[in-house]
Amino acid sequence: MVEKVPMTAGGFAALEVELKERQTQHRPRIIEAIAEARSHGDLSENAEYHAAKEEQSHNEGRISDIEDKLARAEIIDISKLSGDTIKFGATVTLIDEDTEKKTVWQIVGEPEADAKKGRISITSPLARALIGKSKGTSVEVIAPGGSKAYEIAKVEWR
Image 1 (spheres, one colour):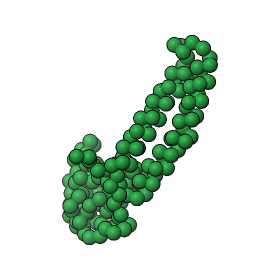
Image 2: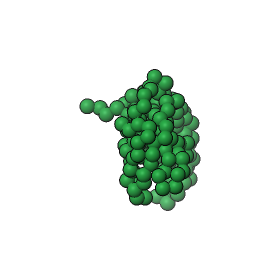
Image 3: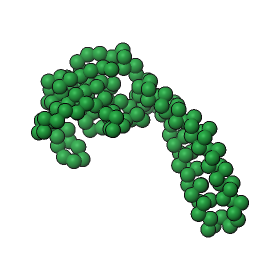
Image 4: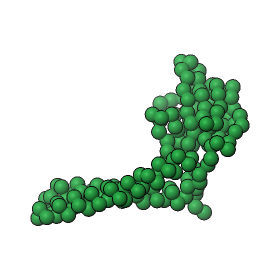
């Protein structure tokens, strides 16, 4: 059975844009760089050639990865979600029980997770601890930096 990759419509669109950019802009530029480096002769000691080939390998790998994620995407429309229980797409306000510091996280699919933008992957330790919980509940998260306790202050759908 093929495992679905949950993501928002925005996450799906961002992957499509990246795929198109890698296929139509990066790929031709890299092919040109390889051809240019080849014209310099001996390939065994040609750093430009090896760098371009490595960049090509990285780009093609990323293209394959994106195509795979898009093919298995399960787009979840967050605007149709509601309720008090935390699940995919929820925006959760947490209060650190030690420092009283407030943080806000949206639970999204792995391809669109970005901690700097307040989006965490559904597979992260924090998201896994939050799923199924509701406002007013305390959760303990065992993360690489140790154990942290949070109180769920708010659950929103935006």
